[in-house]
Picture (cartoon, rainbow, N blue to C red):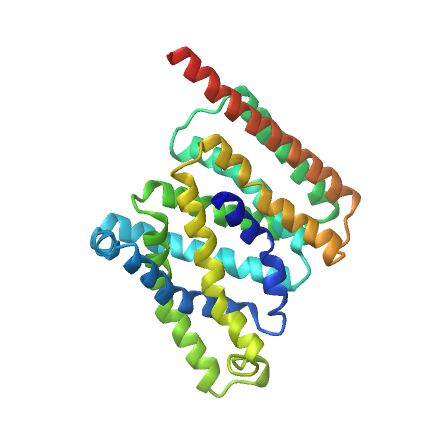
Length: 293
């Protein structure tokens, strides 16, 4: 249930950011970071894990890795918010469909993890799908690839950094806190044109949505982190496809984004590759357990 709720959170996130259409994406991300820091500290306090935060911060290797991942997650959030507000939800959802397969490929390159024959086929099918989309929808393909790349490399960095999800996110947002706080101060009190002035304080609804960005960030992560402790890894892997599927449906049916033939072919090939990849992960894991027994 916790994993399901987390993926539902992530899946309906386009609706949330559409409500902030009047606010520039960089300002949305800035508030998301600024308000996440105190919320995450409160969460760590009640989970009695502030000592874990101090220990991770004191470890140079962890701190340096999280500095890199903070830049990746900031880029990912900024591109995603911009894509949603610019009516490119389909391109964004495609990026998160591609990222699990790209993560597998990166694990092969950087972590020397072995890929089965079926996993190589799955990656190949996904590559064909992306290539087809590149022919007709190359103008928005960069959105999908940028989101997939930033998220996959973020996952790679977080995998090698020995730190919990909430502690890690707290350190990442702490790195970003001062730069984004200065940015908000600059657009609030600097001699800026009207198009770059802060929208915080304009309307109660906008204020609540900007403040709520912290909860939107922390809530699904906390739920998912709790679910990982009790669920099988193969089941978790299947759940991660729910969020981009919901985003895809929201883009097509709620916001009426155009679904071209190349989009449809690409998504079908991506879904097929994910089905093959997931089946290989599930049945391959079962076979290994039987062999070990």
